[in-house]
Length: 119
Length: 113
Image 1 (cartoon, rainbow over the protein chains, first blue to last red):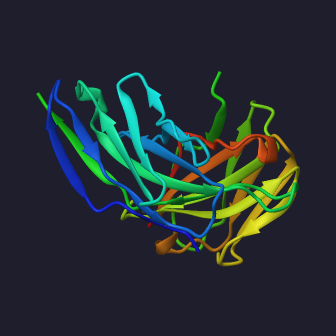
Image 2 (cartoon, rainbow over the protein chains, first blue to last red):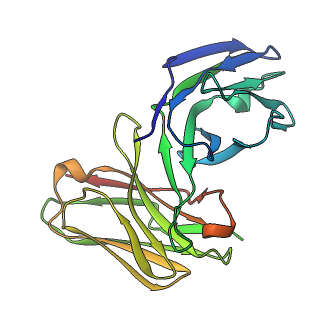
């Protein structure tokens, strides 16, 4: 079974600064996907960024980028130029594809990191 | 238009009642899910349907019964509600084998009193 570990329950960052959230995972799969989801106080789950394990290049999405280290099974999220609206819970998630064509994907989530952006 | 929509968003009900949460997606996805987020904010999958067929059924009390009338809808019916059922329930969808990003609805806050 896959496990996802987020070792930082809470973090804070000054507005406009950069912060990195860590995530490690454990799997024996070679083909999989990794995600960061953001959950603001409204509780909506918003996709921030995704990474395919077969891609060596780190994914970026505007101010959000990842540092994907496949051998180390590490997938950290860097938020640059932090904004007040970035205040949220951030969940790292692992997904393995189904083995059969009729299967479905399943996300395994970490326990989340609560990020506070301070004005 | 909201891609994955759930109703109701908030629900407060008494122990022992039966309630349903509806979910619809307009993304043309083949696969739909129900996830539960407990008070500690831990998210865990409950069910997954692919083209109206049950694919994943985690260890969930049989008081929880998903129903998929078509591949755009996946409703969750809960019988004999208990205090421990209080949680946020998220519906989600993905394209299935040809797509691999799961999109979530806004969540349904269920409080059992």
